[in-house]
Structure formats: C-alpha cells, structure tokens
Amino acid sequence: TRLTLDTSGNLTTLGDLTVSGGDITLADTANIKDASGHARLTFTDSGSIILKDEAGNAGITLDTSQNTALAGTLDVGGASVNIGANSYMTLTEQEIDVSNGDLTIDVAGDVTIDADGGDFTVDDGGEQMMRVGLTSSVSIGQKAGDALADNLKSVAIGYEALTTEDGAEGSVAIGYQSMKTANDSSGDYNIAVGYEAMELSASPGAKNIAIGYQALTDASYDGSWQIAIGDSALRSLTT
Image 1 (cartoon, rainbow, N blue to C red):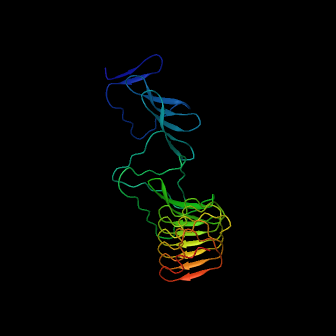
Image 2: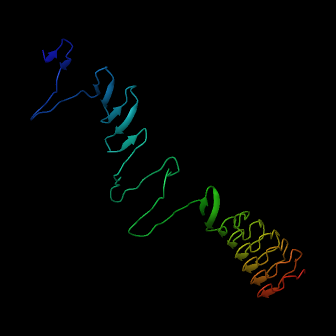
Image 3: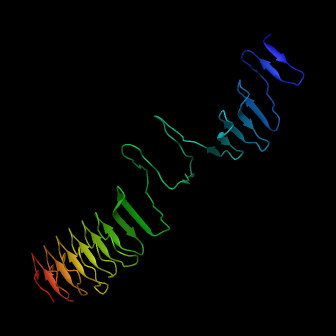
C-alpha cells in the first residue's frame, strides 16, 4: 500500500506527493508536520506562514504584508542582501558587529549620518578618537578634549590636545599636547597652535594666543591677552 486515507481524513503516502494542474487547499490554520509529528510549517488564519524548529519555536515568519521576521541569525555566505528601492534597514539591537576584517560602506551618492543626540564619535578599542557635535566641542586625536563638557564650543586636534579642560569655553588647541594641562574654568577663548604650545599652562587666563613649538608653555603662567609667536616664544613667562 502506497497511499492510505483513514476515517479521520488523514492521508498517508509512502513516497512523494505530486500535484499537477491543481491546488492543495489547507484549512485556515494548518500545519505540515515531520515524520515525528512535529509541526514544521504553519499556515495561520491571519495569513502568515511560519517555519518552525523541532520544538515548535517560530524561526522564520512571513506575514501578509510581506514582512519577514527572523528569530535567529541570518548567515549570508558569498552572497548579497538586497533591500528594495526607497526602502531602509532598521536595527533594533543598536549595533553592527564585524567579527573579522574591515567594514566598507560604498554608496553611489552621499552619506548622511543623522544623530539626534547631537554628537558623532569615532572610537578605537573603546577609546574616543574623534567627536563632532552641533552644540558641543570638536575633538580629533587620541585623548584630545577628553574632559570637555558639552556646549563649551572648543576645538582640540592632536594627541592629548586640551585633554584636561572641562570648564573654559571657546578655546582652540591644535598640535601634539597643545594646552594639555589647561584646566581653568575662567580661561576662555585661548588659542594654542603648535607642538606643546601652552602645554604646561594649567591655569592660563583668557584670550591668549600661542603659535609655535612650546610657545607660552610655562607651568606657572596665569596671565591674559598675551601673544606669543615662534619657537619657544614667551616660554618662561609666568604672569
């Protein structure tokens, strides 16, 4: 016997079931089961199709709006994932992880990063390397502007540039360790450009300009309105 129909309406075949030129009609809620009786494919009365594992857990769900929900991991090897025109991808776990190698984003047009929080940061191993914000400061370089609070509108570019300042407003430090130790809440609008420019000035006054190698860098300097331009210019000035 190859095909059996019992009194409950169950049809059992020992081979393949082929339907040519017709339809197979299922109930509003129906299951296709495996040999052990586990429902592996379910058609719901709402029109969804659910692919299940042996324990009956939903793995892939396709609803009537053509949305697909995946309960596990989608592993695409050697192929592409295509998203339709004018569509988008939504991440609910807030992170894209690449376990090995690099990640390339290649677009034909422009790339727009829309951060409602106001800041865009780039980290290396969890350490901030760059921060750009609409209302906050701009920091580029390892440990640059590490302590800068929001809304100070300062610029720190270079390794440890302006790294301890957390209160002064509107300062610009460009260069290796420029204004490294500055931490004076009233030391606003200072400009330091150059290698270690104003590096040791922990409590500078306001509106100083130091341009050049170690310009205006004495640790005791606490003055204001000074202009130092050149190699070690006003390096030993203390007030």
